[in-house]
Every structure is written in C-alpha cells, then in structure tokens.
Image (cartoon, rainbow, N blue to C red; front, top):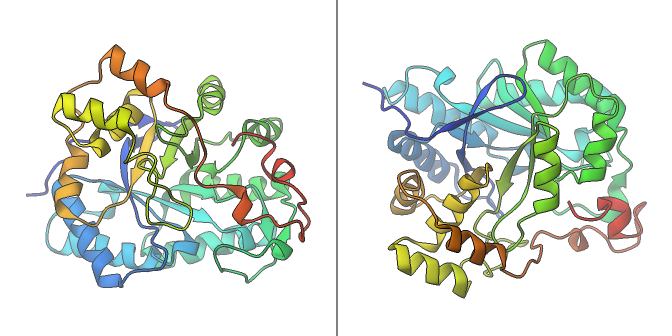
Length: 322
C-alpha cells in the first residue's frame, strides 16, 4: 500500500495544491545518477511528494527514473501523486524556444505534464549555452512579455498545470504583472533566516504569489553557499532549547512564514529530520530573535557580473533586492 505524505499543502493561484516541503536535485558538481535515484525513492518512501529540478541541473532524466522506480515498487500508484517542478534555462528564454524546452523537460521526466514550470532567472542568454555559472558576455536582455506569453500558452495546453518565476525582484514582478493574463503562481528565490526577504515576501503575498525558498539552510559547500545559517548562534540556541536541529528550526521558520521550502539532502537521517517539523511550533520570542539576525544575501549577482556583458551593474540586473 502506498505511503501517504504528511506534508501540508498550499493552494496556488491556479487552484493547484503544492506541498510546502520539497526536495531539490541541484548538485554542483553533479553527483552520480544512481545516488539521486536512490535519494528520491527513499524520500518518497518517507513521505516527500514535491520534487524540484531544472534543465541546467541535469537531473530531469534521473528524477524521472526515480519516479518510475517508485511506481514500480509500489511506493506510489502513479506520477499524479507527486508534484514536479522544472525551470526554463536562460538560453531557452526566447519566445520560440519556450515550448520546445518544456517538451524536452517532459521527455526527460517521462511525464505528460509538469505541475509547475518556472522562468529560472530574469534574463536571457545566447541559445545553446548551458554552463553554470554563465559568462557575462553571453547574457541578453529578456523579452519577458513574449516569453511569458509562451509560458501562458504552455499552461493553456496542459503541458504544465501552473507557471511561475525564479529570482524575480519586486520590480521584475511588477513589470510582469502589468501585462500577464495568467499571473505567476510562484516566485522561487534564495531565502533563509540570514536572508529573509521580507519586502519581497510582503509584495508576493499582496499579489497572490507563493514564495518558494531555495538554499533554506544556506547551501554551505555550494559555490554560492555559506555557513552563516548553520553556524548562527541564535539558531543554535533556539535549536538547543527545543531539542531540535538547526535545520529543523530553519525549515519550521520558513513554514510558519507561509513559505514553500525546497531543501536538499541525500542523507536518510536528515531527510527524516526535515520532515519532522509539523507537530511543534516556534514561540513568539523565537521568531523575534530570528527576525533580528543580521541579513546578507548568499547567492549574489557578483558571480554573474564583471562589467564586460550587457549588464554593467548588479542594480541593472536585479533592480535592487530580489
């Protein structure tokens, strides 16, 4: 008998239900595909039902294999029991390439539809360039109006149930909302207790956009990551007082803020711990202390900008706080 997930869900503007805790599959450098398959199958057995990938991660096919394996061994009855997110990479962020890129993702994932398809970054690049991080000279301005029109068409055609964006600032979202027929259901951004993005969260809430957090634990060990979250004395003190891990405090904080949290771990014990955040709560004092943690972005635009490309400054690319 299939195991039922214990993860709560939020309702997107499309009317679709989205689990509030997801497992990400981005690894830089990439890990062996069998490790990812094993981790995803294990996560499904534990109760995870939300999985996040992207073309640039090179894990779409592997995630598709894992879902098929989970069905084969009876952990789930069908693909419909999981929520799958993928993303349009910058080099495909051209109007005529949106649908073909999504079709490629569907073939890779071995599914007829996505639950959520996101524009990965508010920028475009020369077609065919997949490398990460990209070179500044390969950037191009994003024709967001035309690209978004194609994203909307993909939803109308049933290729994806919902559409959204990633790494969009308040200004970028405002530009999009000014003409969108179907508003973005989700904005996935870097967000954790050391980069809380309150301004952006308030803007998204006011406009019916769910915020999803990547790097909710700071992504220590990744090229863009840092250890400020996991080494925070404030978070350590709260965790010790509650008999929880720092990771659990971070994930619970995100959940209580109304955020969908996309974490990554291929360790069974941590996968179990990360699920154990729904039967307890942070106190008002805990939340106050977390709210006073000094703020600093970890995933910065500096890695993309050196002044040699069409974007000469971080402000020109990001329009301020993302």
